[in-house]
Image (cartoon, rainbow, N blue to C red):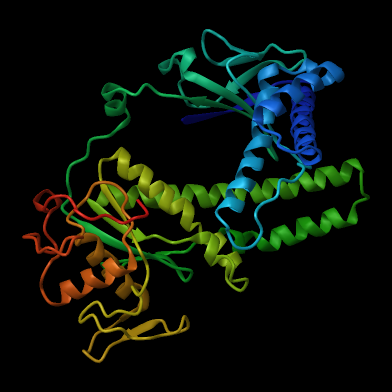
Length: 427
């Protein structure tokens, strides 16, 4: 699904109608969760039937489009199904028991309840909530897609206004896929990236991209705005305005982080034919309460997401490498040198002295090149990582099955050997 977002422009009464539609969708979702809690063996079809009874009982629920109520039911059942799945998989810790929504920010329509203008610059919502016609401000061109390709329309409320999102299902054809891609000339360069907190990333050439630390830079202003909220009377208009100012600041920081990750990822992809990076589990890393704020501020997940996106768009190779022992193994001789997080310099008995992140980036690139140039994102197991690094030290390049190949480290991708015979079980 492709998501195209536009800023919605309307009157104050229309914005109030959007808020009412969002509250109605939240009401339906919470009622479905309560119905599931109070009754046994409730499935999705039972929730759909319960939604029909809600529309007959409450007039304000009947005023909203029936498809919007169905999406609210689907959201409720999605949380229920996720809870059952976590219990079945015996995931340690909390299983994600469904909770009631207190401050929902969106309502979603399907293929009815809305109508686009001929110019695709206005959208009219036709249910009885009174939203009416909204102007769409944005640079996307919806004329490229037929109306039957728009599967969902979502109204989103943010601190700086209201937005309309179109979820488009593109045609699964070679012609459309070719139009979405951009042809680029091969550069013959390969690079390994090691992300960090001191520097945003360090590549295998020794270059270090500075970490902007957007949240840390705006933290002083955030604390000031938070104090302004605490001084206002609860329930007053001034308190709502103060909360909105704080929300706008948080929104600005998140957008700065996203745009920075997008810009850097695009430059990296356009400058290299192969990009190797760490397959990090951010959810596990942020459990360290001493580093959680800095890790979230760095935006590693956004960076990886845009690397993979631009890799497909420009036809470049992106490889996710298991980060195990990449910081401890010497990139020159392969010896494991134990070091704590505070040790920032890699010093080996072979005489290799490098920055810790630079050494890790070189190891990441070596492991990625040993996969013989596969197109796409690949995840290597720790066992395979150790085998590949040792093979590089001995001067023998092995593929994933352990068989020697004729591919040498540093060769251009077009000269790389054939496909890997044994892939990771996580693929």
